[in-house]
Length: 203
Image (tube, rainbow, N blue to C red; front, side, top):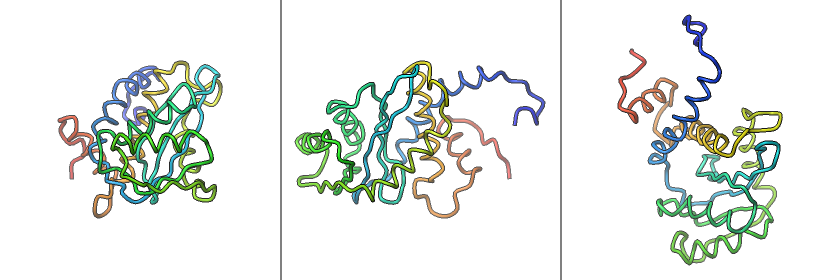
């Protein structure tokens, strides 16, 4: 796009823009997430940071809409609890009645603690099924396909901020269940509104 308009921009400049603005876009788009009182799918996948595995916890609803995410250094019970706490703490309406996970033994105690804290409704249904997890496994690919292929990210900080941008774009493309057709122009207009900018597209 820059070349078409006669601009020369180094890739490092684009990278700095991503690290600066992606977390801000993600933070401002969070307010538009819809309640997910039905069911969600929760699973972790891994990414590479300096060649070592780090873990990305993600959740989607039964329609495939992204709910939340958390990048952690470890894959353990504390990381799982942090993810549920992040997903539900400030958005009680997000509380799902049913949670589907893989067979990892970290999830049952994570769900119990979320109930004890009041982040989940009492007696939530927790089910473990490989078949229903296929949707979120496919959704992981949408986030990971644009990540560095060799060695991964060079720092945890860079990975976390970049992934925030990837997830924000998934939220934006899904349209937050807005009525009618959700166009790229409307997506741009929403971003402009969030940052107090003039519309970049004119009819």
